[in-house]
Amino acid sequence: MRKIIPFLFVLTVLMAACSSIDCPLSNKVQTKYMLKGKVTTLKDTLTISTARPAVGSDSVLLNRYINKDSFMLPVSYQAPEDIFFFQLTDLNGKKTLDTVRVKKNDMPHFESVDCNPSFFHTLTGVQTTHHAIDSIVIQNSYVTYDSTKANFYIYFKDTSNAPDYQ
Image (cartoon, rainbow, N blue to C red; front, side, top):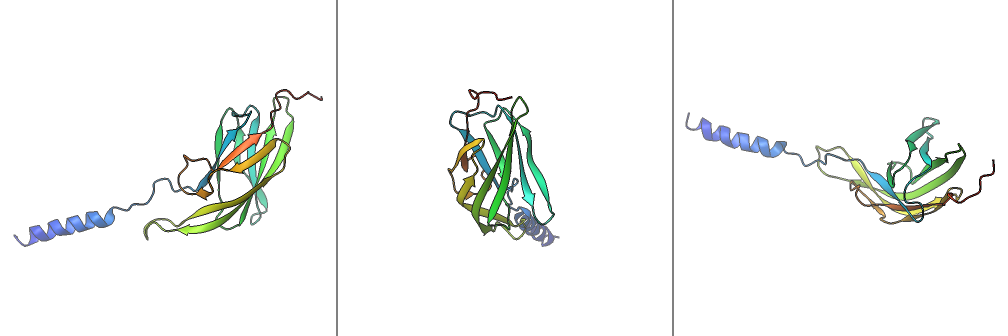
């Protein structure tokens, strides 16, 4: 009995050490867009979608977003470029559509054999049409689990003083 108790103690310690996995609780890899310039809070309603070529349809990522100063968008693991469609709808129902193209390099990220695989990304470029968006600037090119840092600064055109042509 004296030999069994130390053995059980050591076995318990080893099992506890092996079962504590340091996988991140929030392992979503997303880019953060922070509004800058004259428009720092969304007054118009923003809907963002992306094309899913493998499925042959679009997917809405952000639906009817308003009165916010930032938003998060997912990053694909397979394509070297992500394409997003930003649709702004003003109070009069007028819709404006911009296309945003984000180029990136994917890097496999390894935490542990027990953790789900993930990819980090390095942003290499961004292009946009300029209907409602004035410009987008890469602020932090390294995309990880950290959602506190803005990856992009997005500048929307100020349409508050624009004439109404209805």
